Image (cartoon, rainbow, N blue to C red; front, side, top):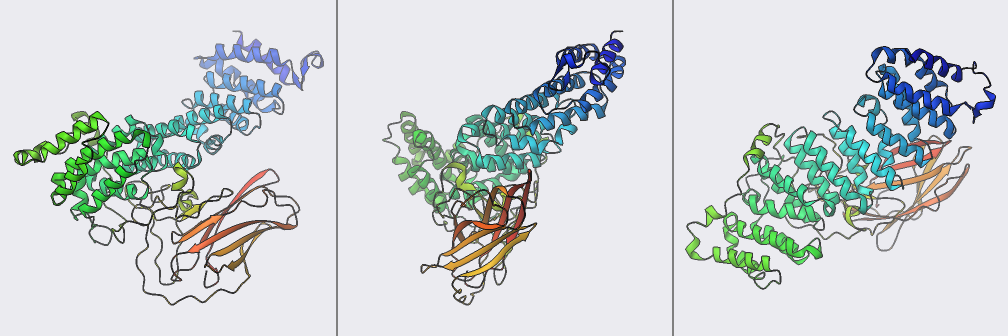
Length: 618
């Protein structure tokens, strides 16, 4: 019975009917302290009461729409109003209005307001998830904030937003962020990613693919329990044993520095190595995937020589020893080499490793010939895991990309640490790889089966490599996330391209008042120097200017920082220098994919373009 009285009092303060309004005015808000108290009381009275909620719906809508949020006083009233809307039995339209207010809070420059908005959104996700989903992009952007408390709260909200419908898109965005996240934040992010993938994955293949991506990008930050869960998922899905071990094998060859990837890969090589070396697995062209047993042992020897974490080398060596003894029955032709590798562990200072290697060597004696196969059989899968696996679809079992050769690829020059070695701009730009012309073939696309044709950083995709601006790379081939498509299919011999003319200029991009000219020259050693000159023909400056480029895998790209992040109006003074080394020997021309981002009149702008008309010889 008190609700109508409270509503009348609140309406008089919101409209012009409040007596002595000037006396109680604070920053343009009439008596904000009394308004806040009334809103809190309405929150209590309207909870679980449909009649009381109906009586206060109109006044709450008036407060939400008429209160100016330019200053903290108004923001405080809006915050109390949103809490009241979300606590009572409000209409759906009113709830959307309240969540939109929180969305505006997220755009504020005040970190305190943004933190309050994220905390409130986390509480109301369960009330109206669809309305919160509209602000997903803004929430994801908060993950990049410099304030660690905002990043953690944004991660909590993003985690709460994930469901069966948006699992693929949300995972893609979180993997994008994992590329650039600080090391101190990656462990929590990897843990959340693993949990949502386990909970909402549409099928087992997509689950395995995504977990491998996480380990490729943040393998040094994936917890032991998540690695164990991955192994149980693989073991309980026999239809994907061949697919998984092949995928892990080629990823280990590309990135031996990611601990989780190496550890689960070693385990899978030991358990399912026979699938890898059997030659029964076929690619999209019905050609068998040939991996020799000697190549598997070469990879394990590389891991022993250079473990991903030197402080935990003994743990890695123990896994290698267990995989070696398992491979005795999977690769019998390499028994003597396995024996020699195990003997190196006999004198290890780690007692556990020393004892295991001695026991494993004993198993290689002739007296164990009759029972060795049974002892080294695959580990049994717990019944609970089998029941869980049967409740979820397996997904596509086919292998969509295969390597053109089983020979090891050349060593990759590091460009920083951790995830920086795994950047793949083609996927980071959420676009497919560029198409090459002439006698070459198009760079292989992402696999079609098991979840998403264009999944971010798909390990089966042959996307281009990235040289992110403004931080320069070391110029190595950074396309490490390509599982099978690292080398394009062989093409007929091409004629030597003519030498490029010195000092050539071309227009690479022109749109909406921004033009980017490429000024090119060739160095004596064959390196192409490309200077990107940014021309702003508008009457306003372009601020927060970021220029990024991606190239195919046969090109090594190094980018220098831009000379400025603001492009003044009517000028072309800002430049950025790139050096490109084309390793195809003139068979393939230079291609480049661009992403340009800037802020104009306070509005962010992001454009993408592809440059494929470089002069011959580049």
